[in-house]
Image 1 (cartoon, helix red, strand yellow):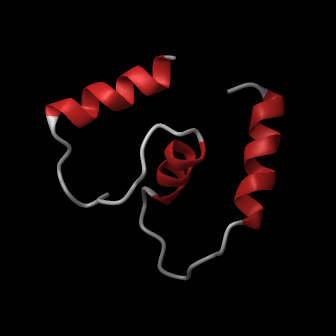
Image 2 (tube, one colour; image 1 turned 90 degrees about the horizontal axis):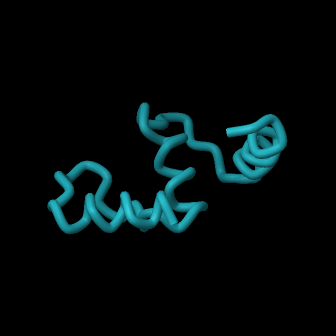
Length: 61
């Protein structure tokens, strides 16, 4: 991630609602959601092979 993207991400993140009890994966969850890689509906459940392949495909396109 270059400096411009990092600044944009921090601006976007600052606008998100803040929770007091945030899980350790919150930043990653918001990033994949914002970039259309995953819908982040079931973050505590294991991903299937098909879901992992779909996320890899979306990341690399």
